[in-house]
Length: 202
Image 1 (cartoon, one colour):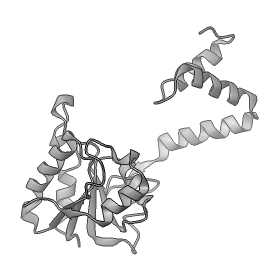
Image 2: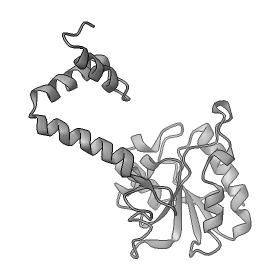
Image 3: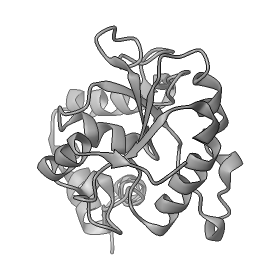
Image 4: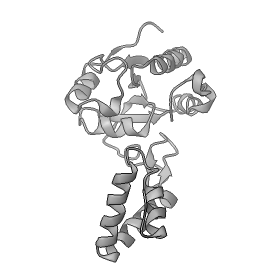
């Protein structure tokens, strides 16, 4: 792809690094920003820089937040007896969009995957165990994508949690096996939350 300007080429190269953005789409975006009022592009650039430098991870649940404790953990109206464990921040967003869950969250930051060199120590499992003794939590809802790695992670967690005298549930298998939560439609995901079931015997 030939470019009339090295500056445009550099912008296209950077935009094309984003997931789902090919070079042609990156070129269209770059030309669009060039055609827009300069203030619009500056606002976009500023918002991206501020996002990268100012967004925090909640000290309690590890969700993304503008403050040290996120607005879910600090909300007195949330049900503090139920803790939903997810692998990724995108899963929190997906579940919140169903409007079916009113409890708290804990974001693991991934799933156990030996092939990718990700073990339990690479995830926020210890911080999960540490927050339980002084909490009001009575139920752990494992909302982890039903993949091989997800099931391995869920099984490991049930082994670690069995001495905590908690009810352990998992989302109903209305979510297809092998599927990712973020791609599941809101009705199916919402029904899975409402109709959660006990996770085996622990």
